[in-house]
Length: 76
Image (cartoon, rainbow, N blue to C red; front, top):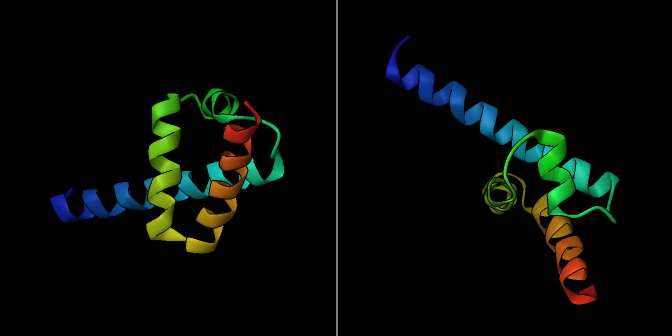
């Protein structure tokens, strides 16, 4: 496979995973980052990176997720 094709498909996979994580968070707003990480079998750090990357993919979805995570942080 050509390098550019690999990078394109890899980028598509990352974007899809970011959207899936964000939608899961919106469907389960009381669950935290650890729960998302467990559901997707990735680390908490990766969840944070993916949700931050969401800013470049879907700004509206990013803002909704950011607000949920801020509520979590304030409730600690």
